[in-house]
Image 1 (cartoon, rainbow, N blue to C red):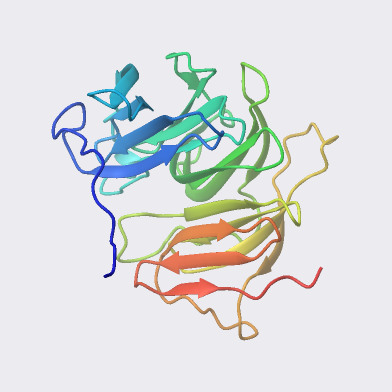
Image 2: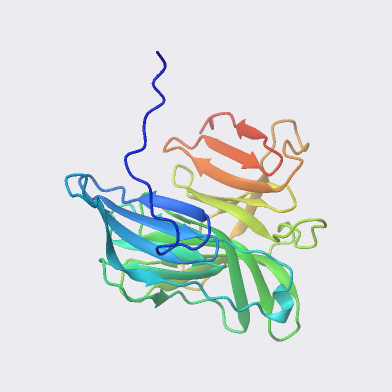
Length: 272
């Protein structure tokens, strides 16, 4: 008989989430049974799972509602509601309607992450490095000076209590197109660290998948990362024909991607 498993616990409807869940994540640390949940309205909750208790899911701290402001430049656009733990379980990052923030060491105090001066940023996806105290997020940025909207990503060092911006992806002439018709998301829609190659891989609403080279650790100038190549399986032909929604990379550098049309691609393992 095929055993499809059974429900251990069902999160109560409306407490604290009043909309469907957008993302969930268990702490990656062994024996640390904390669980983060975030819904489509951006409400974040952190729980402690204890299967021996009558109520096995207990809040670690009160729910954090998402910010609902939508500036004029973002009218009609949707942004990410997502959450991720750092590999050591000491930091929790969250996107709440595209706003990024951080909680550290289990303290229920939101830490804002710095972005370049003069830019308003909204993000679609985020990812921690598996080897470094680094966090990245991709989406779009609006320039307050000239009113331009561009595809954008940021990289932060989150090893200290005050996160530090260490790199961006924004100035390359090979950047993801932000003028993508027929989508409610713009710019970078999926992002992941490739720690095997010391690169970042981004997927976009323009269906492209691009590699970017991380800067040297000694570079303190907050550089815009260098374009490396568009990933494809047939020369310059793009294997995705819809907005890329997910990128994941194995410890050996193998890339797995998915798009809005339902196509999933496991890319060949890098030779070096």
